[in-house]
Amino acid sequence: MTMTELHALLPIIVIAGISVVLMVMTAFFRHQRLASLITYGGFIAAAVLVAGQTGSGPQQATPLLIMDEYSRFFSLVILVTSLAATMLAYDYLRRSDVFKEEYYILLSLAVLGAVVLVSSNHFAAFFIGIELMSVSLFAMVGYMVQGRTRRAVTLEASVKYMILSGVSSSFLLFGIALVYADFGVLSFSGLHSLLGLHSTSSYSQIGAAMIVVGLAFKLSWVPFHMWTPDVYEGAPVPVTAFLATVSKVSVFAIIVRFFIESGAFRLEALVQALVWIAVLSMLVGNGLALLQQNIKRLLAYSSIAHLGYLMVAFIAIAGSNLANTNLAVEATAFYLVAYIVMSLIAFGIITTLSSPERAEEAETLAHFRGLFWQKPGLATAMGLALLSLAGIPLTIGFVGKFYVFAAGVAGQLWLLVGVLIVGSALGLYYYLRLIMEMCKAPDTEPAISREETPLENRVVLSALGLVLLVIGIFPNGLITTVHAAVAVLR
Amino acid sequence: MVDVALIDHVFILAAILFCLGLVGVLVRRNIIFMLISMEIMLNAAGLAFIAAGSAWGQPDGQVMFLAVVTLGAAEVAVALGLTLLLFRRYQSVDVDNLKELRG
Image 1: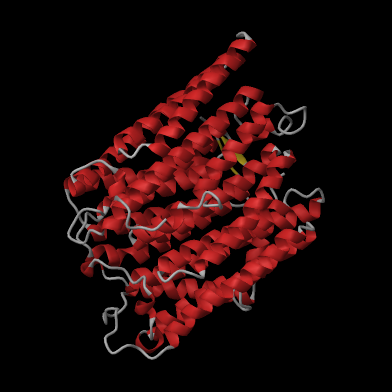
Image 2: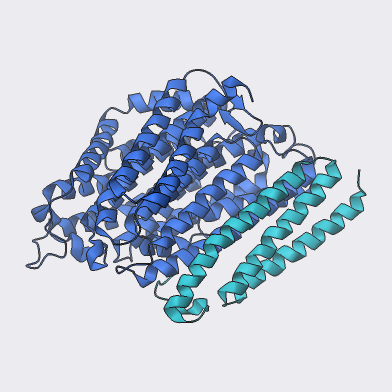
């Protein structure tokens, strides 16, 4: 390995370093503040390193990983998201009576997996990244079962997630094995001249389908979405915040790279199946969200719907017109960023309002009734996030949805665009219902604690709220960045 | 180069193993058996990698198999931890005890 390769890999080494340092530290003495500061410092250092390399051109580090503008952009997004999610979790963890340092170890391992995943252009790195992330995630969901504040649903959620994650990895692996058997290459670009071109045999067609099924589980595309609401509800809410953002976005980022670089869009039957998955995701996600009384389940179904919207742009990439393809990739990347900002605010607020001492989380409508009168700052941020999820103008969610819509129209995907409109209309109802609930007069006995919101949470939530509004009003900066980031995918 | 017909046979065996494992995960209610079935699915994929690697005369298939085995060990380590928690709470390893979430 040369020095330039080592330099390109430095951010990944730093993130791996965080978990090693924390593991050694935790073996000797436990200190949550110190562990959290090491984690913040590591994420910031890695983000600065990634940002410093921006613009230096693509760098293939070993045959497995590529550091180009696309992977740098998504590494940066993942690192900043993880930093925000860790800061939001600090106070929740401090008040609970479980082991706290393990959260930071597992989280930095999951981030390591996510960064490896978005940087991979070879099946081996792709597989290692996705598994490093999933195994850390199901440990994160499950380990807080112990302790006084145990919730029975947490154990159930972690067992379900573990089984389904294992099954989906097996599908993914078997699919990779079939594609490998057909072509004898494991790198994405090596497949480009092979997949879908010469009379593609049944091996690689079944293989590509199995890879998509494996990834569909991780992305909770309908009909592989059954675990999502249960895991979102059962997992401790700081873990849900991380699961809903980083794991979804990194897998989506890599599926876009995989499809473009391997030429999998040429498999017409697969693209046709993706269209139906997208239609079902948008309809089932929005339809079932209407029936939910639990906010975490509601957000789970809404995330299924949002991944359906993302698929509209994703499928538009398959078009033959190059300009439209670029537009569609940009729309996907932009919407992913918008989705992170919106979800992180929503889950961040549930984290802030939850009280682990009472073994309950602020997840029912009662917790939100009259929030505007009790905690106006938090309620404003939650209102903004919900308006943005609904796609109201002046928010990042509107620009993102408009972008996806434009990509769908340019690709002439009329069915998908129609369902996108119907889905958004349904979505408006349940998001606004929650806002109405927050505006009502408060109950005499409020369900949430009266404690002051911790400084960390206030800073992170205001920063995210500001991003949501500023990019919603002046989207040009992010559009230019995204444009430069996706230009390398050919 | 290995006989191509042989590769097809190995892949049929791998597919049968994979389906057996999948059925096992779906119908078994004992978490230990579900984990064993998951291992069978993973190892079916591993077998497919070995066969494909030998057909192409490359070491890549065996490297992937090592990665699969490592993953299986890591997954089972966490899964057995969860199994212990399950057993402590319900005095059984039957996943039907877990039915509070309406999935």
